[in-house]
Length: 226
Image 1 (cartoon, rainbow, N blue to C red):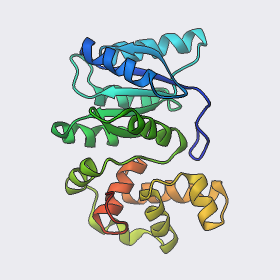
Image 2: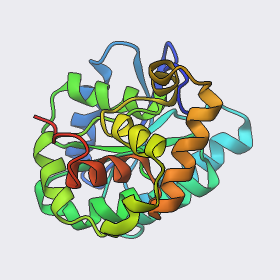
Image 3: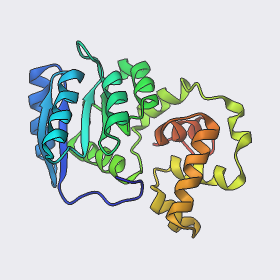
């Protein structure tokens, strides 16, 4: 699914968590969100990837989004996210996190996770985070964003390599806007917006829009989420 596209009418979700009770709760939780449908579950990264391979081989509908716990026995969430992002780029991974897992969140974002959500978030916030991942925008939890920006490892001098237009687009990315939103705001084509975003990510040596947003917040291009 390309950046800037609309979320599908029915969003297929897979839940990956090693604790059966937590997983059951998440399944019930996601099922309460309108237009969301849980199509599978797994207890660790290996099981999740095996399910995806099975669906792919049988030509069955793949999940649009995988809700991925980070700390699991066997293949954990970070490694699984990297494999999924590389093998099934159309499947977005939204990380389930807590305040004690910030280092793993950084690693997951570097592995191309499409976003994160706190494990104690309410269904509306989970839905917002998933839809943002699907449409090329993002949802940043304010408390986690503040913690993550303090740990950003991107070089501070990287912003000097950006053109004024790229800096403007970086600020729009940090506001959670999709490529379509950016294109409409700047009166340019969606393809041009997508190219600008790709260029600025490459210049900043970042692998995700979420990382770019955190950098923009850290450097004061936009205020932190409140």
